[in-house]
Length: 614
Ligand code: G6P
Image 1 (cartoon, rainbow, N blue to C red):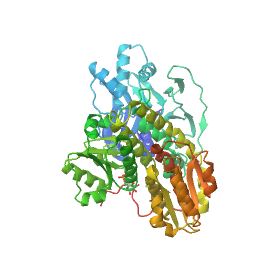
Image 2 (image 1 turned 60 degrees about the horizontal axis):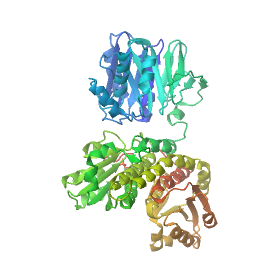
Image 3 (image 1 turned 180 degrees about the vertical axis):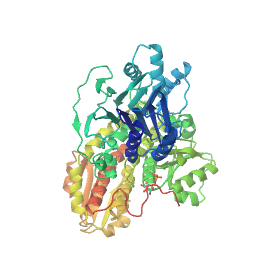
Image 4 (image 1 turned 90 degrees about the horizontal axis):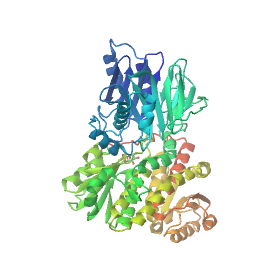
């Protein structure tokens, strides 16, 4: 996601900030910028790479005195496409306050309306710009306050997540930083301090750091720093010594990006729902499709087009939309849809799903559907991507940049989006508001259950050790978990190069059963839903042919332990929501099998993260 750096001390700040931003490049970004205080407040920002910013900054700064205070940002777009205007830092109208922000201001549209009505002019489409104008307004209201007090006061109006830094020409010897839900760390040097969203930009300068906690607001000066809560209560913090290598920090302490991304899923699930699931009101707020919701509900048919893992999410979407909204859904491989002269027209809605938003086949399917007059909606992760721009309406998954080639967190984010979409399409039509509220409550409980599954990592690793030399794997599931079986098999194939197939469990007897012998591990997704007893019979069929059964089952299920050689127990959840949980052990199993076989999990052979050619 976005990256933050800040510097105050005695060095020339610009090169410190730019090299810090380069250290944050691994997180993924689409634009970058810095603000420097040297008698004036100058901002340089642009869409594109930190390298490009560095070249331009160098030209701009020629002849300017060096600044010893500054802030810098790499942006991963959430509100507003990647562009020079939307890049951070953002300035107030007078140009004497600059702010950088990570996270999402959930109530930004309300705040923006208020500010616009007071005459504030917004130059970007970001939620973050609201913050700098809000600080400005509060300061104008009471000029006797200092930067710390006005920032504190502004943040009291903000719902959502933030990690932010503010500097001002009016108080040039300080940086005010605050954290809620978006990490920040202060690096302690001699007569100088470094601020960053993780330790990567700091580690080359100092190994002494202080981690801010949620709700902290700090003022950093050359002489030292103070940390208080947003409520103005002083905080004592322990200074920690960094022991990580830079590489470890980039991967958040994990061996591989893929593992980091698997473990990020509980947090990502929160991010996907943030601002959209309104639990107190028992309703959804899906900004990107709100204006089209009535037309979406009137669709005669929904066609979902995608590739790879996104196609699997689409299959789950089919089950969810048909279950809740009772609208017929077809799921097509984008590559097939584009070439088979599909029957689609004005009564249809075509949903394209893509993590990257750049997959060539999905883009071509989108254009075909548009030509034929269908309403085209997108579910993408990368903001401002071609697919996101070309669809009429859509929703971003907000899963953050996914670096590992095998998709994990983007998949769970897509499934949550489809779950929310299915409920939104049902509202006022097929299910009651009470049922919607109950489903949302259950959805909100999923991140915590996902976190509990991640605790099973060492058990899953020991299962991987036993089966790492198998030549083939079979993955079986039914109902909502049939697509998960496909996704589990795909994960294993992609990164371990073991042949694996996913099948609907009942279909096994029409072919794959011929393959079963004592060398064949068979993974069953056997959670307690409407297909549970059927799955038990399928397990018996495999056992009687000496297949090696590994089951994903619900905690407290006694029966399954009798039938399966290994059981991975996961928390209970209702049928439609289980894919969000059952897929996690399968991601971990594939990961461990692949690493035990010495495979490069983040960059598997022959595969690309984004397939922009046919
Ligand atoms: C490639 C990636 C997969 C991904 C698929 C679709 O094959 O390796 O992980 O699922 O493309 O990508 P998209 O960006 O459209 O979701």
